[in-house]
Length: 422
Image 1 (cartoon, one colour):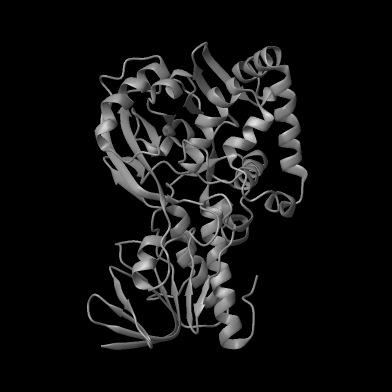
Image 2 (cartoon, rainbow, N blue to C red):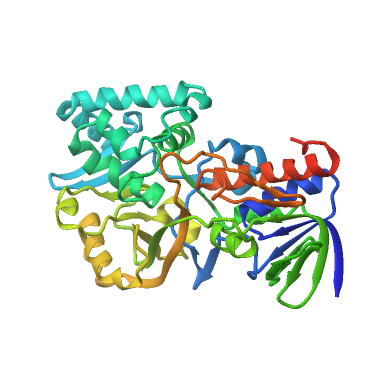
């Protein structure tokens, strides 16, 4: 069986849906082939016994420029995290949040200012620069500088260990903080401008929203592409879809198998555990960090946790709470007993009765962006062949969406000499 389209998108994740949307709005007939049972790629949400379990702990940064360009943030009904963190350190709990939030946030900010006046001033200066400087200034910083080295130039070891390393390890899934410093500053800027949030219906609401405007039949789920041919693509079911343009929008590893000569990325792994609780032990929509210095000395687990039902009550059914705990840099579900023990310390409560609802080991969670690599890599592979995904841009939702738009622009430039509508 043979079908025909102007463009075939291989993969229905964020980058593929981004490209498909632009090409559809430009008037092209588009087919999206998604191997899974629904759109989203790595951004998926499972429903289990009334709970919403995102496949790995993920958040939306409303200040991402491309997200604001492509998504209807109001329709996503985003619920924010507290603008700050709670770090559990060797000296006790430390709140670091905007002091104007009052209560524990104000007390924590005052304590940090009194104990570390220099770091407080440096944090304010760095944050002000990142918020106000043009984005191109941050992107043009030294490409070889790592986040770890950059932080050492700003802050004391104690502040890095207690606050910045555990937070950024969770963002980049990179406990060594070898991620380029300029990516850190770009993401820090977005955190400062808009914080972090979750959609009321789970993270999968974002790809569903991107797919909704596409005509019926455009997205074909359960359709695995096994070959990119000279005339289009072939699927596992034996169908040939002929097209002038093929956009490979799978993750970087799958893209490399479909495209000889394309190098796949290295990956940052993560494992996330979800627990059913009778009630929230904290009652605040805040990210909790393990900031003890002995983690570095003993090579113990670095853990980020949140009671996500404190952020979005609908993530758990009535009468229950949902906690998520992630171990960046590891994808081993056998870590659960250690994670449960760490959670008891972080939340200062017994966790023996916390019911494990799900474990999500994700070996290919985020592509590695190594120091010295460009922030944007080519999306045009050759005549009529293109590639997009967060392995072609920054490893983030922002990067996935941008790469899809870049691929669409390349397709339209080659086919019609035009750019996609804004």
